[in-house]
Each structure stands twice: as C-alpha cells, then as structure tokens.
Length: 86
Image (cartoon, rainbow, N blue to C red; front, side, top):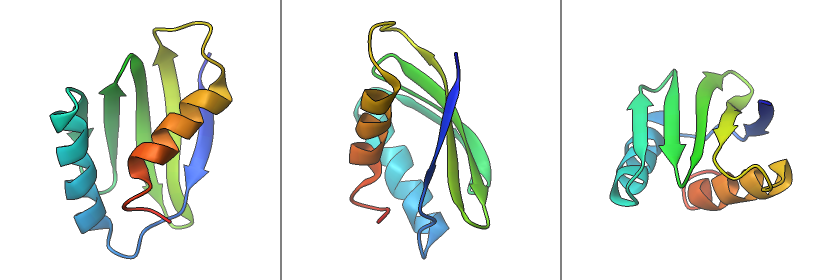
C-alpha cells in the first residue's frame, strides 16, 4: 500500500536533483525524471517524487520487504537525502 511524506524544498533544486541522481545511481538504484518529478528505485524500495511549492512529496509505491515498516522506509529516504535537503 502506498504512503506519502514530505521533504523540505532545497534552496537549489537543480543542484539537489543532480546530486541525488548521482548518489542513487552510484548505489545501484534507478533515478528517472527531472526537477519537477519522477521515480526512484533503490534497495527494493520504489516510489515517485513531485516537487511542489511547499516541498518535495515522496510517494512510496512498493517495498520488496513486506515486513519493513513505513517509518523505516521514510528514515532510509531521509538519510539518503540528508546531505542535500535540510
């Protein structure tokens, strides 16, 4: 079942997008889209993102580990974005 959470919008979305794309790809994941929205797949977690005026909406659509709670998935995504998003 999908779930959604928000990340703060960075000051420079283009720089953040490039940094995250590189980081995800170096970790063996897939990062597709642009500075307005797209999809991400990493470590068995799949989702979409949308850049909104108030922040970045993250929608987790699939997790390969059914026993992994939503809060832990959110924590992993926040850790991944921590260097780029406050």
